[in-house]
Amino acid sequence: MLIFVPISFFSGVIVGRSSTNTKVKGKTTLEESGRLMTETVENIKTIISLGREAYFIKEFKSIYDLKFNKTLAVLHIQAFMYAVSNTLIFFIQITVFSFGYYLIKNDGLKVFELYTVYAAMTFSSLVLGRVYSQLPDQRKAASAAKTAFKQIDRKSKIDSLSDDGLRSEKCIGNIEFKNVSFEYSTRPGIKILKDFNLNVNNGETNALVGPSGCGKSTTVSLLLRFYDVTDGHILLDGTDIRKLNIQWLRSQIGLVSQEPVLFNCSIKENIANGDTTRKNVKLKLIFFYII
Image 1: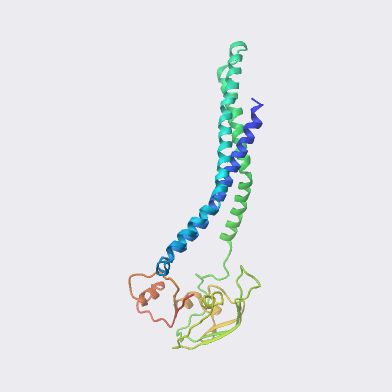
Image 2 (image 1 turned 180 degrees about the horizontal axis):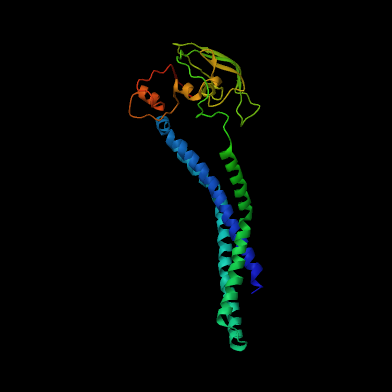
């Protein structure tokens, strides 16, 4: 029996690792195809209007065709090793039961002892081999879990449920960006806004026009305090928005993004859906912006 232990152990390792590698590679392909499919469905009106259906079908097909031959070779190797692993059990059975019968007949070995040794030696070596092959993934899973819990326990710098801050009785709607600089925490050193100045007075209609990535949506996000400025100040009626109550601030602003989800009611009611405490909603600042 000991002769077969290293063989069954290594076959278990190879089967386990090849199975894991296939899942990882398949996951990457599925993620890429899922991303493309999601973008296609979300923008299906634009795709149809431009007649680009064939292009996206071709892109979707190329994702799977790109690694098809490589994946096929890996699957053949995996199938071969899986066959070896399963075939090995029959060779072990031939050896064990042949020699076991001899011992039962001539040495007084009991039948239950034969099956105890057979099961313990055979299945433990196979299981240990497959468990050993999964150890690297278990370490990665433990590391990923630590990162996930760290993110869950992280305290946000901007508490959207906080009751602190000023609540003005009257909102006129004059906005001023004063020497505003900003960079995302995930991309330190890359300034999206640098010494940005802008005055928007009550009753005016304004448009921010520029290429993708120039900071149009970032400007609105800063005004709504989805982020806080790195340097400078954003003033609403002369008061720094960081001193205002965040819920009150956002209740004064209606935001319609590029592809909003609209309910079956008026535009005004759609904008006012975020505040259920008032029947007659009068919004001072309304932004319609396209990215």
